[in-house]
Image (cartoon, rainbow, N blue to C red; front, side, top):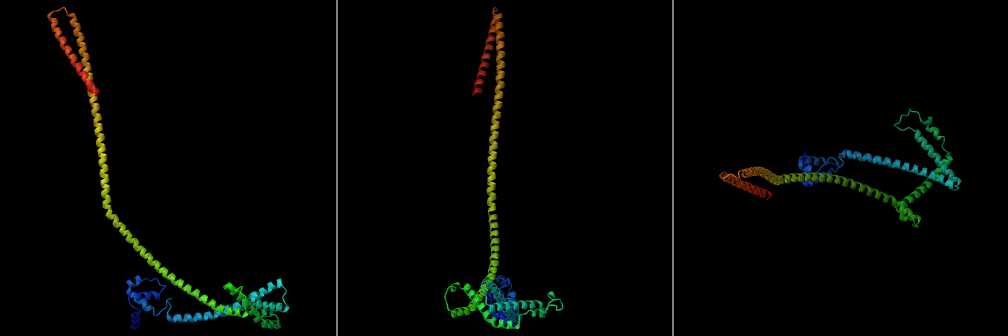
Length: 370
């Protein structure tokens, strides 16, 4: 970097001031203040570049040549627009004449004027189509084999042409004035119904072009302002999106940290829940097992009581059979003496045994019913 460039950079400012000046020098570039802060050498380079190019990126000599070319183009464009405007106005005059001719009687001299002008316009248009330009190959065949000289033979007489030229400026001025008044009434409708003098109308017409220029400049200024606002909006949108991305990333990290912190509490609560659920299931299983054991005990007790009852019943039946047998023996041996006493004692013993078995059977039956 040369000494002059270094002096220029130092005069721009430092820090935020330099950044703002660099951004203002290149509004069309996609550069943010953060980029300039992170790259100070790049910031200095862009600041140095700002003294050689304008906001559009053109160098000073190229900008000068471009302005000269634009001025020349504007001059040629004005000349073409003037010629084209006069040509369109003359065509409109001939069209208006044709319409008037079908609705009213036109004076002969006026009719001759418009017929002569229409022929001259047609011949001039045909000659322009036949006359090759500097970029066209002159050796190529012309349209229908015609030449501009042949078309000139179709021109009206010189007398009629001269007469037409004498009235042309007056008629053209009248036509253009009518169009300007129509434009004035369209641009400012409140003037249309006002009864004003010819001089006042001409005065308003003289100011119409200036008003149109002001409106055009205002429209261009609004367009430029809109473009600047669009660039600023785009830059702010990019900053907003970048900040949104940072906020989303921060929010994601916070959510992850919060989730990791509460994960231990969640796992502990889940563990307590499953432990409690397992204890309930085990308690239920224990209860069911106790009920099953009680049912099994009841079944075993009933089975044992049933077996005991059957045994006592069989013993009772055997005792009764034995009693009956003893009674029969007692009846047969009743006539016997001492032998009868022995039989009686045996009978008493059997009798007591039967009563004992009967009592045991009764007690067992009551215990079972309870």
